[in-house]
Image (cartoon, rainbow, N blue to C red; front, side, top):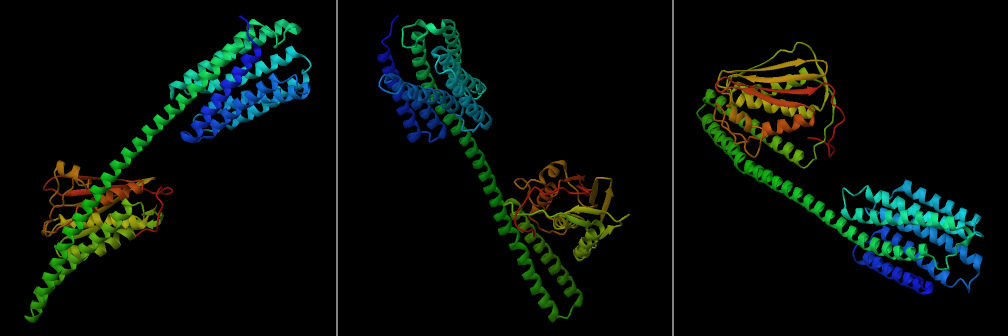
Length: 471
């Protein structure tokens, strides 16, 4: 079949202009991405070479040839790199390879520019090289995007065809002339139109596929954020419930007890006064403990809790907490025991450790009967220390054990002296121990007491949580 070359070149230029307009439209109205402009620039360079070739009779031949060759080789590189950058990644290694390859191919063209056959072979091989790399990288994304397979297949066919064409032209030798009719060049025009059209349509469909996956990914993130927000709202509602109910009760008790104390003072009954003073003290202490727990819990939930590890003498901290809780234990005639075998030093956050010990001992006092006993034990090995707070109080069922560390299901129980609480303390302890890379658990049996244990590393590593200064 014979072709009218001027008409074919005009058709190719017209087809390229249509593709350029299509990609510019995509850039301004759909995907404002830099790689679209690379494809546009590559096709624009190719269109300029067609125009210059069509007007080679009225332009300086050598100058036109050199400009044409540079623009043509650059167009292959730009188009291919634009296609393989569809995911927005700047593949610096490939970019460097392309730049060096453009310079090498163009240098080769300058060397053989007097030999039309060698010149044509170099240009054809350069197109097969650049589009072949593009096909390879697009094929590697086949597991992510199905349209990348389409473009990869089209570019692979074109690369193989160009290598076959280069081989045929090389065999023809000096007899080859692009301006004369040849079967291989006739097929070249047909394949070129197919490749440009199929690649452009496939690329636009690929971008739509990328958009769909992006939308699905964003929807998934939105759903995850929605679940987190719902969980936060549940926590907030629980928190408000605690504040509304559990703070009202202790302050009402303080007012009632202070009124009774005032009346007792008028009757000069010192034993009654001491009793009411002790109750006021324990109520105030429990209320303060609740307020501190609420403060720490809010910091933990809003990620404002900063973990500051430092060297801590464990026995000193435990003694101070026991001394702090003695007055509360005395009101129930409960004995607190701690007999350290040796001094143990930890590298951990002292404030968090104090909060955990304070809550565990307060919880033991709450659920221990009058005249009961609480023991604090410490065991250690080379890497960890285990601390246990054991009481001989009311204990718990298996069902209750599974609920006490979950704020959404944990309902506060009244103590042996009818003490109230929020159920927040143990939840807070669990979270705090987790922040220190530790582990908290409980061993308990109804009617036989409970033993809360937690393990901490001797040397706590760099904290994962940052924020404003702690407590």
